[in-house]
Length: 372
Image (cartoon, rainbow, N blue to C red; front, side):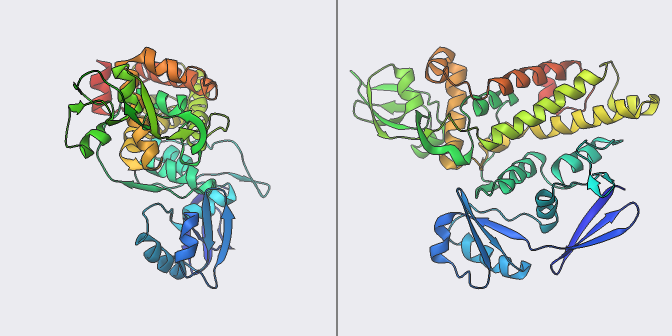
């Protein structure tokens, strides 16, 4: 028996399978920042404290009222469709096989990338990287702003910074390792102009390049380029001892890609041709999953740079960290070379980016230009 779709209505979910329709009770949730408790009316709702968010459960109409209240305070809340919530809470997905009353832990065979995306993301709709991040944050009950607020393009290579810095909303401000967005007061022998590594900071200051004089406040990433002494004014820190949830989820996808790539023999032709000529459902399924993983991961860096899903300070550290890594890799490595938290994930990322060159996947035009 395979799950085909899930619908929610009036406190119940209806699970459409290829054999029957199953019915279950389900109470949806909204995840709020913990400070919001003091400003909202939550009477009659179930409230559960988590380290990085407040889980509020109740009837859908009541949660919509809570959403209206909290949106006036902050955009950093998480309210995803009840159908997807149910699948995440139940460990199920679109396409999950139910065997002897238990869900299979193995990904089901699929015949198209759309089916693979629906299985991985638990929905056939939406912007793939955003849905991926929402799912990760919901599973860990972390409140964040996942809406697009900007249009910033970063290469998929920038995921190295996400993994190297162990960036995720729940670890920002919890450690003693300074991030690139840290504000410092610089000492300079004379004024200097610099194309900032922190485009968000530069935008606030009225453009790029920036003019710095002794005593000015600058991002840590700029101060390091100027190679002058500085005093920390506002530290932005991170913990490297806790494995952050977004890098961990990225690592899981990269490992899955590695296993799938090793199970097939890459050859020329596009995936449609392969699907029409091969008699192996396993090969078609593997290519479909690899396409779906590419659809999630290739635009993920740009999505994280264009939203506050990492928190505003995390986003700024991500963008400026990538700029610093591009311009002065030795300076960047000197700061973060001792981070061993995500080295396996970095290895898998290298494998993924190299493997794309030999796979007949439908890749974005900008990625094709980059490869050329």
